[in-house]
Image (tube, rainbow over all chains, first blue to last red; front, top):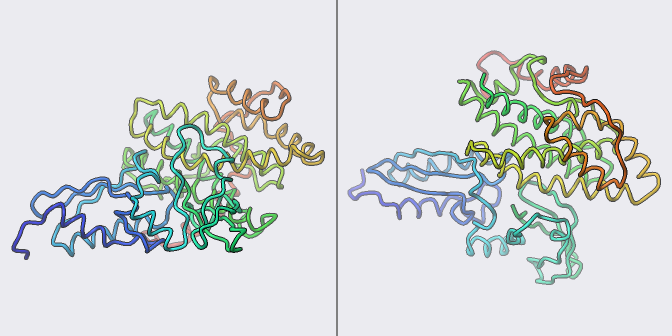
Length: 164
Length: 223
């Protein structure tokens, strides 16, 4: 039994240690998928938005959030929100740095209008050598959230987090 | 069943069947990039189906899995366009493009819905579908750029056009015609749409395959 009251800050700190199941270099807080955390006594209510709707990691994320809250001494209540509130613009600046360090180009900011092929074909920066002499190889990649690119400078294929 | 659950099941069934049909290219697409693309698109479509089934299931007091797999073939409401068996590549592209174009129009209408849950889910789906549209349009333009590609795409679109019209309600069909004709730069025939509710022979065949594992397992098996 904890002597002190569980605070919202404790909850956010606990969640900041939960890695994304598919890209463990970044946490769920970095990813921006925790919409809110409310503490009432020992009860902790979390609103959580999945990234892609077909993401198979959804159930695992939910279980890991619950485990982190239990470890911190709280009783988790997790609500999955399938609304339009998450976009890749919610990934934190720290999250974007961690993606780069792990070999992923971070997503481009969401365009104001309709997403077009030409925006995907821009020369995004290679996370390995920093060159922008890169090309789109495949809009789709090994998971729903990734595209595949190729760096003409260092001849390294790399992945980019899709903008949604 | 309410009008709301009817609508949710129609769209969920469309996405489930199209996802299943797209996944039939896994391992045998013309080249590796398309193998990855069609598999990833299939995963998205089935994810959309799951979310929509969950919304309907909450209202009907059942589960998404039961709605997806435990109904009889005649109870599915998917449009005929997504029931058709795996088609050769030009027809696969034509179906994907016609469906995604119709789906964009449908999602546009749903995003403006007063039902905030439906509007929210439609907006979230639309963000992912944007990539499917770009992929399909890229392929349409690629086929239109050569003589043989154009011929094969034209044949496929003409064949699938009555099915494509059947994806949408009456009032949204003129918009679909306008968008498809604009990209193809030609006029499409005035045909009778294949209405929703028609069950092609292929639906029962796909149902047999899709539900076989679940039907073979003892009741109450965990997944």
